[in-house]
Structures are given as C-alpha cells and as structure tokens.
Image 1: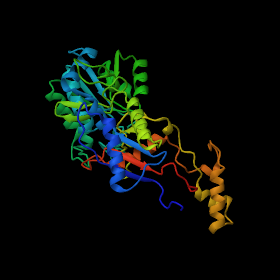
Image 2 (image 1 turned 180 degrees about the vertical axis):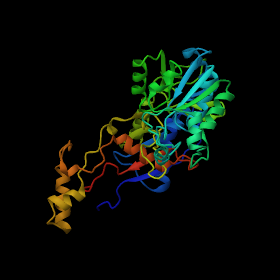
Image 3 (image 1 turned 60 degrees about the horizontal axis):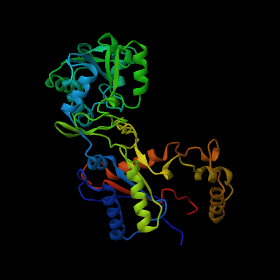
Image 4 (image 1 turned 120 degrees about the vertical axis):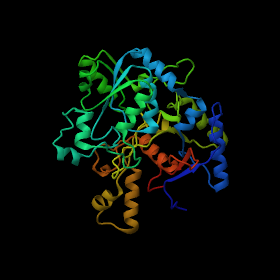
Length: 397
C-alpha cells in the first residue's frame, strides 16, 4: 500500500545525561524503546540526531571562569588593555565568557556592532539611525553619544540593556571598561592594538583585516580554551565558540571530536535492527525569525559530526514547476504518473536545471539540524534525541 505520510520528526526522551555516561548506548536504547512503545519500526536512511549539549555533558567538556581568565592572561598579559569586539548580546552565550575575559586583563574596550549584533539582537533600529542621520557602516559612536542619541534600549525579549549589563560584568570582574559602537573592526585600533574578536561566522575575515591594519595581538573566541587549562575542558577547533552558561562560574563548551560517537550509534543500530541509519550531532538550527530578526545560529556550525550519508545538498525536482510547466496539460493519474517518472529519471546533480529552482540550496545537515532544533526546543521538553523518518522519501515512495 502506498505510504500516505512523508517526513516525520519525533523527539525521543532519555535519562538525564551526566559526565562519563555511555551516551551512544543510551541513545540506541532510547530510540529502540521509543519504537517499541510507539509502535513504529526503523527503516533504512532514517536519521538519529543527538543535541550537542548532552554530547558535551557526557564528555565533561566544561571550563571555569578562572580557566578562561588564565588563558586570556597568558595570551594578552595581565596588565593589558584589550579590545573585545563584536560579541553577541546573550546572557547564556557570552556574558559568562566575558566575565572570564575581563578577569584576565586590566582594561576592556568593548566594541559593539550596531544596530544589531551578528545574530540579529538589536541595540537600536535602522529607523532610529535614520532619524538621527547615523551611518552604521562608517560612524563610530562613543557611549556618551550613543546614550544622547538613543537613550536606554532594552532587548524586546529579555528586557536587558546589554550595554549597561556587559559594562557591569566587566567592572565586577575587576577590569576597567570603555564602550564604543562600530562595524569596522579596524576602528578598535584607535584604542588598543590587542584584540579579541568575538564574532562567530565572520571571524576569519575580521582577524585578517585587523592583522593587515597593524594589530599586534589578535585572537578569536575560537583561540580561547582551545587547549586544556589546568585540567579544564577545551575545544581544539572552536574554543569558546558554541559554549553555553552552565553555572554562574562555568561554561559548557561545544563538544570535542565526536565522529566516533556517531559511527558507534550507526553501527549499533545496524547490528540490532539490520537498518542503515544516518546519525548526526546537532546544535543551533540555521533559521531566522522575521519578527524578532534574530538568526538562530550562534554555534560555529549546525552539526560538528555526522555520518557519510548526510553529506551534500538536496537533489530534488520542484513538483509545482513540473505540474505548471512540463505537464501543464495533464491532470489526475496521468499527471501523477508523469511526475513520478520524472523523479525516477532525474539526474544525480540537478544544479542549473530549471525544474529544481526553488528547492532549498543548503547543506543537508543545516536543514536537518534546523528541523531537529525546532523539534527538541531549548527548554523542558526532555527530548535531546531526535528521530526523523521519511526525510529522503519523494513522491515515488
């Protein structure tokens, strides 16, 4: 009988994960118990995804504020004045890191991008800039000018004035603070030649521009906590990028190398069910809220590890294009038959084919990771494992 359901995404519950837990075994057991409980079976090319949070937790990949401070001090010097530029506005993502950064130096010149941070959190609106005749691409604002023009601006969702909040975090950590607003990274060099750039996806360009403009020491968030500090956790590739607040004095880092982890789950499920399942670790989804203007992706990548079958991009035909163009004269069973034949005969690479226009030109892991992130949520659902079925189906299945 023809299947009437396409893609299904299920959140799978599991025990609370602690450091040292055999996470791969727990994931496999949880998925198989869910299948038995809910009355479904695994199929080839199903996808099992595990949130990065529990992977890092099982690895014990944590770092303290003191460890962050020590790493920053080693790189810049205890008496240094450093520019901390382009951080995102987040209590969960950055404030705890800032606490450690400030504790490692004498003074922080905090340079905020405006009107919003990298992921869309607004300090001011473009309308406000237009009203005051401010060009965000060239104008550098002092804190005094910012307050005079725009006053206090609280985040619409959190109610936090991040300018005041980040200033207080720096001062409470024992450092002096000066705040400026600019979008050209080179603007910080007027204040200091030592820079910690905190942008995520544009960090390589920012470092390049700063070094070419004469900066003496340039590091990114990916360079802090990229080695263990006195036994702490670390992430060799991403450092502090992708970290989250764990306690008032610790952060949970992005998981370390976890390719063996996804391969272990894949093998166990093949051995137990005979089905070849794809597996990935996922973090933030890659999507943007059109109302709040916030882009979700604060992690350095959506998926730090995945099995081979999730490599690449979708290779799909647009059904509505075929129905409205190639087979405009057909309807009913004749139309369905013609479309199914087109799908069965499609090329392995449809790039440039007009019948594929409008299909999503993004990495599979970014698309699937976004679906996982939306399914699991970020609160109390208790489903850090996601099972997706039918993702690779098409109209012919």
